[in-house]
Amino acid sequence: MAMADSLPLRWLYLDLNSYFASVEQQLNPALRGRPVVVAPVMTDSTSAIAASYEAKAFGIRTGTKIWEAKAKCRDVVIVPGRHDEYVKFHHRIIAEVERHVPVTMVCSIDEVACRLMDNENSPDAVRSLAARIKAGLAANVGPCLTASIGVAGNRLLAKMAADMMKPDGLTILTEDVRAARLEQLRLADIPGVGRAMERRLAAQGLVTMAQLLAMPAAEARRAWGNVWGERLHWLLRGHEVAEVPTARRSIGHSHVLGPEKRGQEPARLVARRLAMKAGTRLRRANLRAGWLGLHVKGEVRGTKWQAGVKLPRITDSISLLAALDGLWARMAAETGLRRLLQVGVVLADLSAADAAQADLFDGDALLCATTEARRQALSAAMDKVNSRWGRDAVTLGHDALGATRSRGPAIAFTRIPELAEFSE
Image (cartoon, rainbow, N blue to C red; front, side, top):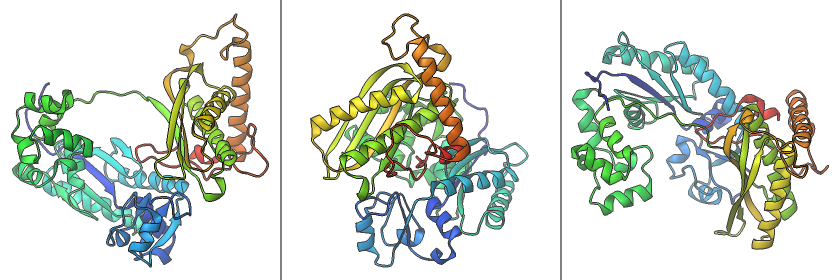
């Protein structure tokens, strides 16, 4: 690995504080200063997807059950997630940051990274830049939208620095303080180090950041069991390491079901709706799927089921729904679940749409050239109608009771939905 000759401050990382809850407080002044929890659906059995700092003061965190949040704080306010609003604010935030420094990478719905040039990366220049960004967010996006900013020699350290002072903090990891500040952290403070990895490292006697920082590169690689350990060795020392480009591996959606949708049939219709949404994204990305997976959680804690089926490189919704129906029947037969808490659909084994050749001879194949062209044309027509008139303007096999009407795309923090998805 080629190491840089010098280690200047090179990255600014901005992390919005309690983003979803802060947006809700910005939109509704009555929520400001109050403990707020954002939930996927309005039922006590689901979990918080965000908590304001006022709620965090009571020990409420992302993942806390809603009934538990109410027990911790009797004044907590539960609000349903409005993911279209979070995406709109996301774009406003990006535009504001761009007024002060170019955004190099959008890392998630509430995190961005900006590469600093030589004329803007001195500690004094960084402090001034951070102050301008924070003031711009307050004035042009909203005073409830605060951010913690980290600055360091590489993007990983800048992200870790942003986590060191929350909310509304600024941490600059210059070379003279980098090692000392890192030694105060836990191994779990390194992005990607979860409980399982902590246990694995502890089994090898590695339990503190100081031990890791003193460890040679080859030993760090052995501890991690792969090249990431060696890369981490250099990153924690402030060096920049070339990133390995990754390709999109899957497209999926999941949905926590409200009480009225937890029966077998309403849940099945929701799963079909999720498959259609995934199909729309598949076509927008000009991809085909070679695998479809279904996963469900039962209402009874601990009851789960997941399985998948190989697909003949398809891209149309009709074929996806046919495959899903087969999986659903298998799930119902194997589990006997009557009440479901969550359903999810994922498409994987993705390839470029023009990389698959339709079978011109097998009339029974899903990818038969003649039938595939018709299915693809119908799917494209549905995409166009829904884009213009709103989601579910035209659907496949949905009932008139609206059991599959979606609240719009939910946000996995690392994927920002396109605004078009909220009208599909």
